[in-house]
Image 1 (cartoon, rainbow, N blue to C red):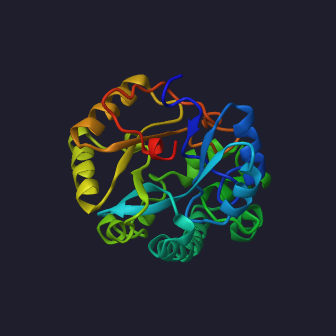
Image 2: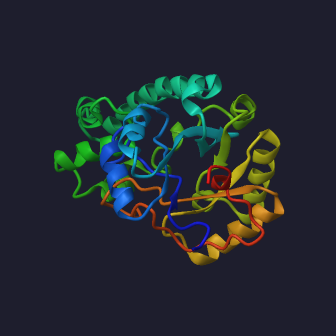
Image 3: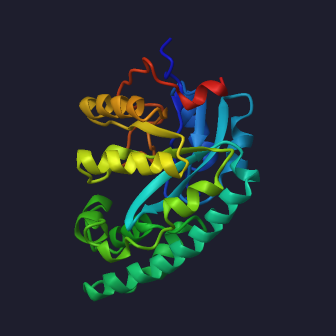
Length: 277
């Protein structure tokens, strides 16, 4: 069996912007042959206890979170895996980012109103249903009000990073965050999705390593095979451990199925999950 089969270390539930509850996600993962699953909701640990209970006797659950950070003023995501529920640094930054998310949502709402849209914040909060509020909840509100035909269109017209560029400076810097995270795996999420040149990406990886990053995702979903090969080479160049995941959010949009992503080659690479296996 390939060393990566049955491993998915990047998924989301209704605790943030996924469509399945933690229990439903675990059940789907089991049906897809996943034996090592990480729940990594955006800036929240709220779904982990439920996922742990659902995973008993079914699969191995690794606690995680996808934390929003910045490199300079450039927004990034990092995946944290391990004892995140008992890590004071992780808990502190999660609480910090939850407040930032609410403030950011209020700013998003103002920006959308300036583009001629109605006040969407109450409906977005309703869509979040107590989960971590994010752009997808604004997109869901737009779809319900028939302002756009689907969520992809909402992002294209109103919610993309390009459209909301003024919100790129809200997250804490990696040089402030990463030194406080010793004891958990600190993984740079989906590096090839960021609009960076090859030179800039190498610069990011160098700074990430210096700040305390331990690993990089070499694949996150259905990425182009040449991009996966490229990330494998970069992981070797910078002596990073590697992680893999689907970045599953739900049965919609561009997301991969749980446990499904472009094939990887782990020759001469150290997977972050081998210490658990």
